[in-house]
Each structure stands twice: as structure tokens, then as C-alpha cells.
Image (tube, rainbow, N blue to C red; front, side, top):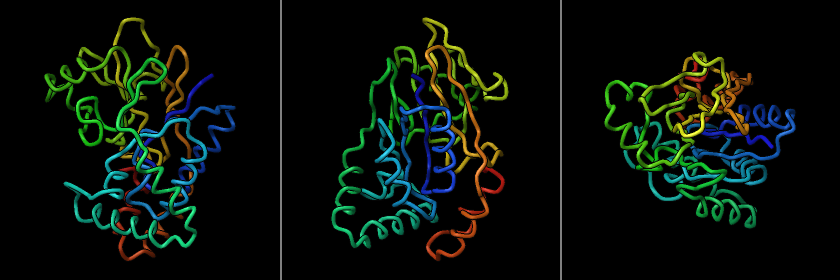
Length: 251
């Protein structure tokens, strides 16, 4: 059975519901979330409730960690959005829902081995907050080599919001270079980033996710009502307008 891999929802309910609808339309019932359910966007509680209900496995992202504990090394808009998100949790009047959400956040793993692969939000070395950027294959090859030393064969990461595949050469392949499908080769290591559901940063505003098949990873894009999210963000004083406007350009 194929498995859908989603990441970096960032409280974007319009994007998440569109992706979940696409996943269900393909008959896929196994869904893994690589973290950052929360942060930036206007619908944290609704997004978290969907992840709790629909995902087989969910991991801790740095923005989830920031809401549960404290934001660290965040810019001003990200920090404010974390505090605003936390207040939404605290304002919940239904004690059962409030407890369920906090307990779920507190139970999130930082790394997990599943389906013969390592799953983390950011990187095998620092699973919550180390970025693995495409440019690292040129500017920091030793970093990439050290990261690959920590995986047996496959690893799935999010965090950068940039979809694509790292190989151990080292090299990086965006979906457009591989016709949106990466075929696994026995004995060869790879790191796969499904991109972001709720805040793509590859200049494509469509939500991004991956379907994991037995022999390959398939990259998919889904359109959603971006303007609706922009309008919601503008109405919330504690959320920077930029957090909505950037969605229009996928940056």
C-alpha cells in the first residue's frame, strides 16, 4: 500500500484539506507527517485535529516544539506566530479537546524508523532544526557526507520547504529534473524531502507532498485557495501580513 508523506503544514487548513482530499482520492490510507503542523498560519487547531485523526505517524517539528516549549532562534514574525498559536490552544474552552492537543504535541517523536527508513523533521544529525539545503551539495559537501553516514539507506526530511532528492555523490535533484518520480536503487542511499503542504518555498504556490511506493517516490502538487489564507492572516494582528503574502509566490 502506498504511503503519503506530508510536511510543514504551518496551520494552513486550506492547503491541508486540499492535500488530504487528493490523498483520499488516490485510495491512500497511510499518511506520515514530518512535522511543523503549527506556526505561521491562521488555523493551528483545525490542522492539528486533522493530523491527529488522519496520520499514521507524526514527528516533532521546530515550530511544534516552539509552541510546546519555547521558540529559539526564530525571527520576530515566527516568534510572534508561535506565541499567538499557543494562545489559541489555551483559549480552547473544551477541556477534552485542549488536553488531547497538548498530549499529542508532547508525544511527538523527534526521529523514527519506519518502513525500512529513517524519518525526521530536519536532519539525522539534528532532527528538529538542522536545514539540509540543495546548495549544500556544492557549498558544504562534508556536511552532506556526515549526514549520509547516519542513514542506512533512505531518510525522509522536511524543514526547508523545498522538495527533491539528495543522493550520496553528493547531488540534489528537484522534482522537475526527475519527472516528479525518483526510482529507488538497491544499495544506494537517498534523502527525500516532500516539500511543504502549507508554505512552499520553491516559487510554486501549490501544496507539495510525496507518495511513497515500494519502488519509487512520487512528487505531487495540489492547488488550493491561497487567497483565502492571505485574507485570514491579514485579519490577525499578531501574524505578519508577509506570512500570507509569501504564499502567493511560493517563497
